[in-house]
Image 1 (cartoon, helix red, strand yellow):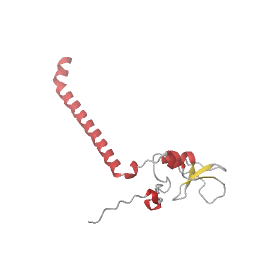
Image 2: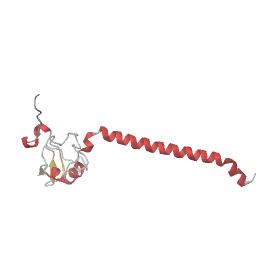
Image 3: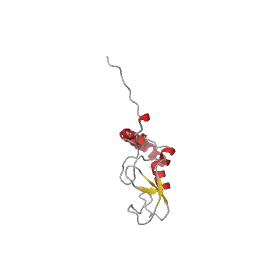
Image 4: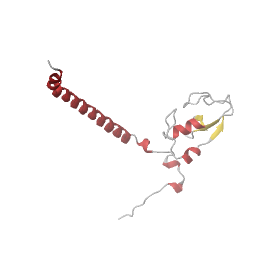
Length: 138
């Protein structure tokens, strides 16, 4: 059998498999993108972005060995050393290295240990930040 004749006879089969592979790949890409978009819509906290000033307003303190708090940063998993500056989240009181928790909070609005939101609840905001819309009675 001639080599050119072999490729000519089987070119339709080879082209068909190539087209099928392309269709399957495109379908998988489309499905992955669609699922990722649906998951992003299902997670409302992903739209919350903490600003640099919000993160910097969280209190800091120096670590003193023998304190009752955890002796390890849950973000980097290294132990705290005496006089290291830590940032303590106000709602859950978990402490972390300042650089570690700041990096975490740029992409997550919650505590890495207990997942408590660090965003203030509407009831904890000062009155000037609460907007109430009153509609007239008809």
